[in-house]
Length: 495
Image (cartoon, rainbow, N blue to C red; front, side):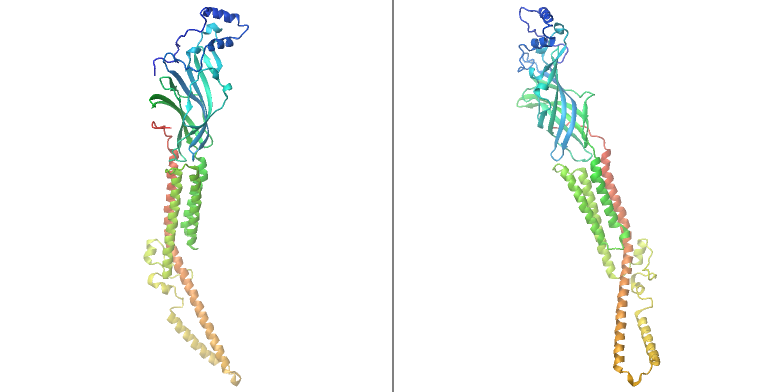
């Protein structure tokens, strides 16, 4: 920084633009004599701008750079489009500099120490926002004024509507903090002609975000750089913004967790073992479809990049967890069907290893397993051979009894009728035996299926606990980022 500061209290004294025949005292007397005809402001303006050329920068004759002080007093975030990485702000920043050509003696002008002049009448620092896609001044030129003091110090407050490029780091979305900079620089002047110094915003500055973002701080910095052999300076207004995650937690995270929780509960709920296990697979596939729709909503709001946001990782992990649950259920479905097809109930070792009490169907309470399955699932009357013997004995007794009790019809009954009746009775008995075997086979199948369902219900309890714990762990690992402290601006941050 140069030793001569235009903002020092001692302003370099320049000769007053009076004529050679006049003096300050005569000017004062003439000003006082004509005060009734013209106000002091009008006299001062005539005095200041007679011979003033706004095209020439201050200190141009002494090869001293103009020192411009910048600060921001207002910043309002209006919009941030993540998928386009563009942010829009309403800002108001103050520029201060010194032009010694516009100084005067207050005593010569009725003690007038400051005045407001139109912006179009004075030299202005030429700065532009070079990372802006669109910059609009919110006031027309005829509404802009500059405050000028008797020491030649000028101050202007410029409101802008700026749409600038904002490079986003979406790694922690939706618990992310973003830094967007509004960068200003002179299009031509170097530090030897115009130096820029930025100061921290005043305490009464106003910064505000929108419904999704909280604008909690604005920091400033200035950097020097070389461009085309000239040393230049640029100023950054860095906006510190933190996302409000309530919307995403309510609309995406909560439904994702509930869908995954209900999906896991439906897949591994032992109470559903009475029905087909394939219905659980259909439930899991429907849950995967619902979560894929939520993932599509997140991807539509994010910029296209190689980095997956935190919310995307959570949804993908939940989808993989549910897909794994469906796969485990399909494997259990295949294994259980194979065991049921064997027609054997689980062995005693299986019951003991799973802490189960061996039992059978409701219509038979014998304890059976392994090689005794056929005996346990046979009819209560005994084995097939015993049943056949009993049936033979019963049939012989019936024939003898019927022979003794059957009346003699004599020659009036045709023996062919008796033969036909006998054959029909035999067909009825055979049909009843086949029907009975089908019923017994069905009961046997239901008994075996129920016993294996009891076995696989224990596995359902185990996987229900494991997958529910994994689902809660994923949610906790995701939410723990909401408790992280707000990151600080990195010194390597670039526009």
